[in-house]
Amino acid sequence: MHEAVQVVRIVSAVSYALLALVAVRQWRVRRARAAAWAAAAFTAIGVVAVVGIVEPQRPHELGLKILARILIACLVLFPYLVFRFTLAFRRSAPSLFRFVTAMTAALVVWTFALPHLPAQGESWSAVFAVYIVFFFVHWVVLSVASARQLWLAGRDQPSVARRRMRLLAVAVVLITVALLLTTSAGSNSAREFVTEILAIVSAGLFGLGLAPPQMLRIAWRRPEQERLQQTIQSLMTLATTQEEIAERVLRPAADIVGARAIRVLNEHGRTVGRYGAADPDEEPTVLTFAGGSLSVWTTPYAPFFGEEELALLRTLGALTGVALDRVRLFEQEHQARLELERANQVKTNFVALAAHELRTPVTTIHGFVQTLHHLADRLDEKQREQLRASLEQQTTRMALLVEQLLDLSRLDAEAVEIVPQRIRVRDRVEEIVASAAAEQRDSVRVEVSDELEADVDPAAFDRILSNLITNAFRYGAPPVIVSAEQSDNHLRVAVEDRGRGVAPEFVPDLFERFSRSDSSRAISGGTGLGLAIARSYAIAHAGDLRYETADPHGARFQLVLPSKVAA
Image 1 (cartoon, rainbow, N blue to C red):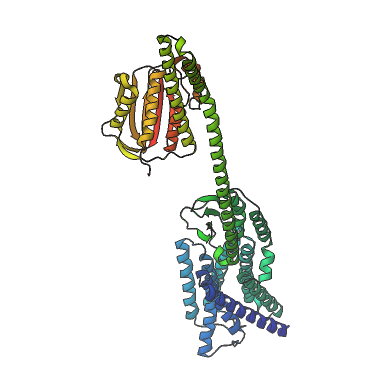
Image 2: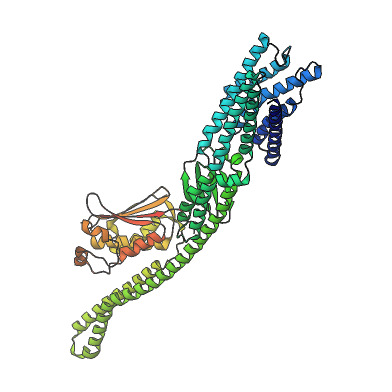
């Protein structure tokens, strides 16, 4: 049994020496704070394991006494260094950190201040017994705290990181148990053998937690890998919107690295999808790719335990960029096709409207001309005058209709250029009133401040306001009130009258083309295009035209235009 104990002790020393080399190599590659604490911890325990097998059992020489205390100090530092490894990911309370650091420093100083280190089988002094108690309390408390932190933090991690963190937690517990058994082992070879076996198992678990083999990582990662493959396949199928691409990617991308939140941005920096709730005070990890970027709010453990997962996420991000770019091209092609179809529909509608609306005045004019041509000699002067007056009325109507149809066609084709200019609103309103109201201008009350200015397109403003004033006299009753104010960076111009207003059942169709209520047909002829054209001009100006009932009665139209629009 003694020979077996010696063999496993050597195997244990070699295991911890290799573990120290792996940890140091990781630190040299990553240069991260967590890797530095891991390298320090496993270098300390590796030194104890290697030097411990060659140290004499009764160190009487001064150099050997100092060496023995150095080895014990390394044992004291190991659980503290492991604890600092866990703190590299998430900070603890400052008071706890100061207490643990002070306790470790005191124990190290106490180690070198011990007057005598008893050899194996030698009785312990009271001072040394108290020291041993504090030594194990210190070790157990820090080890349990580290193991608990790693185990609990692993719950929210992807498969590989979770297994690595929990292997480290179990290894910390096993090496603590092995140390406790060492104290009570005495000369019992069986206990010594079990202790060394536990130390070897602990070293193996530490190694798997720090640097698991590639094949083992692949096996652990299988659930995320399968989900990733499904996501890649879904990206290969055609999506019609960038939001649909983001919906396919977000959840699997978050699962790969255990992210709390993730966001997809397109090439213009616009968010096209998000998953989870991000802490506004935390900066995300940004993975850029052609066509967009991923903003990932990972856990603090992801960079150390999920380096390969982050690489997978970069690959998925690149494929997402390709998919987003494909959708962008599809949307451009689709929009171009819609524009062509819309232009064709505008042309078709214009031809149909022109043919339908021009038929009546053209037919009437043609009839009058035929009558004058063939029957002029048989008509008296009064009849000829009536025909000429009707002919002038119909040609005027046809000219107005043609002008309105041309306006509609230009508005539908978005061929109306809006060029905002700085105007004094009251002066412009008074000019429009003088032109549109003519003899009835005294029945118009202009309530606009002399200082009010706005950036609007004068032509569009004139067309809209003149139409509203004309309609107020045609279908309403004086007085007509024109008011204007500026609020929320918008110019709001209202035209109201004191007529009967618009029948409630007709309000939904008020701005439709060629729509006229029965009451308006009885009052005046018209095409039913005026309000449709006015609202189209307002929309072309990035504004709107709205209707509401005036107080106490009448119709009130409100024109809302942005007061500052880039030319």
